[in-house]
Length: 318
Ligand code: UT7
Image (cartoon, rainbow, N blue to C red):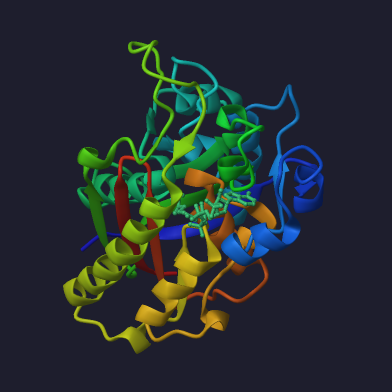
């Protein structure tokens, strides 16, 4: 049966580094607090004229190169983002135009920090059912645009960036399973509560009940990991790499512990990237591939949790 295999990866980070020390100049925080509670040491912030699509384009071009693919080979383009350039057209359509692709399906997926997992799972289903041969899947964010820089409880957490993969139809095993979930009953725990249609609902920046989100993330990811292993009839030791959403090193460590993994089996970028929402998993995956840790044939578990609430996993053989 046709499988969907990752053919190439790419990523891009804006040039500007914002350290914890720099943030401590403007809000009541400290490097010690941020590192001990989150594991974050620095994050990247896009230039004022740099958009989500700009970051996505750089990551996408790198992924196409790595896959040995031309843009014209792409017949499905999905961008996972919470911070699109425009209300419409979708960032996927903007990216399609930049890459000179004409006529392929192109759309955005909005599942906040779980967006890339959702997008990859959708691409896999398009490929497995036979309609799509090569999909470009991007996670790209400019979270800095929706952060209140005066709110220490959120401003220290987020960063900007993009990651991308090219996924192709293959006879060799690739994506083994995906598991997607959401529960809108928790919509107010982590939100930007104003929007296009509902303009009066609240502030136009991120608000989060961090402690509650933290507790839910740990228990939900624990169950999700169990669900993923059971669906594939796998043991913990069958997984070589954990590529988690990068929100908080303490959440990542709890999931690794659940899997019986040591931290050297986990790709960690939260220290340098902060939480880049839908971009965090493809950024981390590309980091692990490019530095040679993740090799062809390795079994990789991607998992994410975020606003919605949404959560999901993809298990794959690279
Ligand atoms: O990506 C989507 C999913 N998101 C997440 O998974 C994030 C989940 N949540 C978290 O990662 C953590 O809850 C945070 C890192 C956001 C917060 O860590 P915490 O250990 O849960 O801290 P807390 O919210 O319980 O706050 C503890 C104290 C409070 O002070 P009091 O009330 O004890 O006096 C906060 O006001 O820390 C204070 N605080 C800060 N202090 C210094 C909150 N933010 C800061 C800060 N610097 N930046």
